[in-house]
Length: 141
View 1 (cartoon, one colour):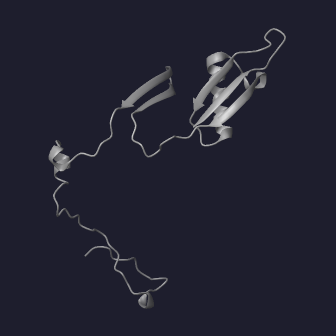
View 2: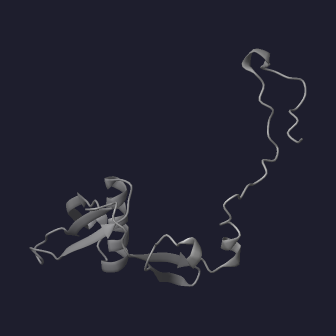
View 3: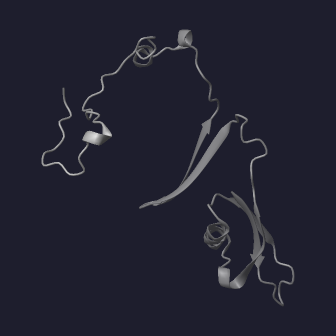
């Protein structure tokens, strides 16, 4: 995540233009700057050609191991326009076996649960193994 601060280029009419700050999720600085200009052009009519990036800082989590509450905001374009969605994930917790409510989860809690291993390849010793074989392997028993 990056914090990008930018503004319109100073001119004779506006010597100190307004600063715009955004937190942008991006894998690197180049993508963060690109997304900043994309959103600023849509929201405030400031193009990259008529603006400048004042600062770009990478934001890292203070405690990445700590469990937090999450709010996710998504903006997407459809045929009818731009839509905003928000989803809040309040809690992520490990549930004890006794507290499980749903039947399809309860069936997985048996201690001696085993699944069949279908279509296994026979393990051949390296000295008997061939690099090219004329027939396909048999994977059922």
